[in-house]
Length: 251
Ligand SMILES: C[S@@+](CC[C@H](N)C(=O)[O-])C[C@H]1O[C@@H](n2cnc3c(N)ncnc32)[C@H](O)[C@@H]1O
Image (cartoon, rainbow, N blue to C red):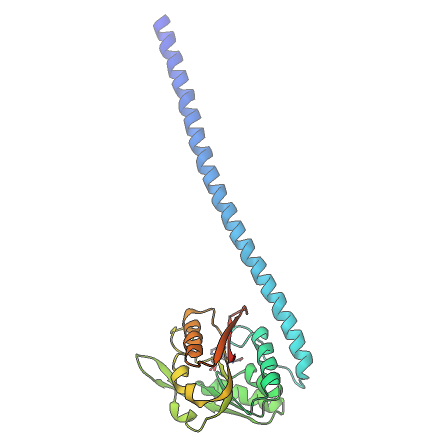
């Protein structure tokens, strides 16, 4: 009878130990999961803070720009495919500072209007899309701005499998005081804008400034660094803009 009683007791104790071990494992798993959830919440909250601060900065830049430009008609949305207000404000400030006789831009849109409204004497903007070139022409017309030429420059095979603007459309361009590189679209190929270096390096005036958008992307950052290295009397500054802006200007 005693033996049965002891065996029964041992069984109960083993059951309790097993239950305790199982609860311990569950607790550990739950803790790991809640640590993971906390890490994810922290990450999302940091990203949200960053996005809110960018949005705030963009609205500040936009408000300033609207006051400075004295526009007579509405403008299309900025950010996304279009330049962000921080870049547009930099274009405004650069045009005011260097009073360029000729601005050449790769990738037309709201930035074309801003360059022209800031006081550039002549703006030539290339667009690889007939549709978007026409949209920019209409925008310029609506705002009754002079001195802007939007050129449709189809994207043709370049080298190494790249496509780039039809080079025959840039033959006449020289002594460029401000070059703005925001095209062709760079989301499919990291090197899609790289030909700008070879094609425009010798078309710049000695005091030229080069502004490049999207240098938070690897390909555009490399283009900015190589462009700056090819101009020994210039220096490169990277602005902490929403998409990253590079300014290459005389020292
Ligand atoms: C980065 S965008 C140039 C934006 C321009 N600098 C601006 O501030 O509006 C480069 C090219 O993308 C094309 N593009 C513009 N908006 C687009 C859209 N919503 N969808 C697809 N392509 C677009 C146009 O051909 C444009 O030249």
